[in-house]
Length: 469
Image (cartoon, rainbow, N blue to C red; front, side, top):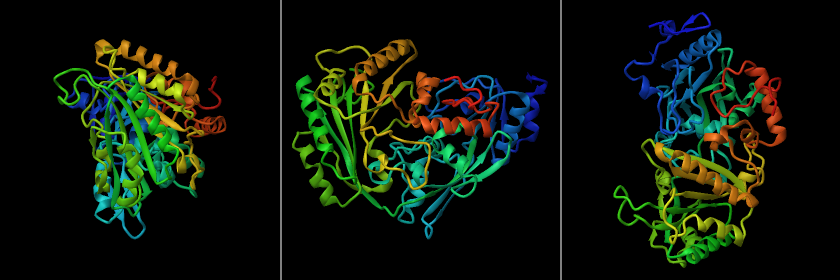
């Protein structure tokens, strides 16, 4: 089979690649171009399973000559735009991993997941600033800024990146850092894949062996009880030091046999805490939450390697609709709106999981190594994850839109670049992921490093000469 693109034979790409080159119909093609989030389906012209950085550079050069866009994916947790007709570069086999305990750093290939880095760093009494899932790929997380579970204490994960190896649209492999091409270093940390493909990163590790944290589940007996728990949590966070990061999630479970019996058909307010201090002080800080009478309480000291177990994110691929927003401080009226989504007296409809992550602290301060990510002064990050099987997809999207509309009074209008999915990847939403000054700078740098929009299978930032937003 020969697939032509502006005079280029896509099949010929395989001769220059050390790794695997897969075409539609080949064994392994669908698996290589799939990923964790199943609501976005890729139909690329070719998949390059890169064996090294040279493969990535070769594939990028080929795509530029062929006039095809480039898509990149490690685990597929950040899928937002279908990679139809693209040269699709799978980085899962770039598995370099080394820890320098003296320097307190790790060098990480683009195919690594956070769980692997957690394990390797722990052997030296060190830890990375990971998010809620050990299954998430390192590079997509870092280039989106990275909202760590201990973010109020240490800031965004992007704050702690020392250097990145990036293949840009001209096919060159560049090492960028605060002293080597600092503008590109700034842009890639927050600009996701708009400026190139990151094949390796050097990050700082922290001397952390343990963490105090866990979950508290409060069954929702009625709407008033839910409002009391949520309101109490919102009052509690105002008194917390920066060493305490936390979130509250509103859950309503369907009555289906796939779920454990303890959750079927029930609603909960779920609080999660991550405290970067000693166990005794952590227990004291959490005591006001325990007084509220949780049905389940897992809070306690644990090895840092188990930090992601606090959130219990799905490990297998999911069909889900994902939306996000950055919110102001929340008042009693906001509490009433939020608990209405899990009102046990009104069963039926899409089953929401609405998380509010408490921001502030180091997340709201300028980083030591400037990057393009910012909370823009928000108090909470709202994250909505709703199961969306194909037959319910439209209803779920409509329900999510309605939920965000009802919360508009508290919506800052901004979003985080690492949480742009579905139609949040539309140009007007992408622009809101950055301050106006940062967006203009990103668009200008896009014009410098990718003027022809080779990297546009993403939450796209058009080059300034092409921007009409």
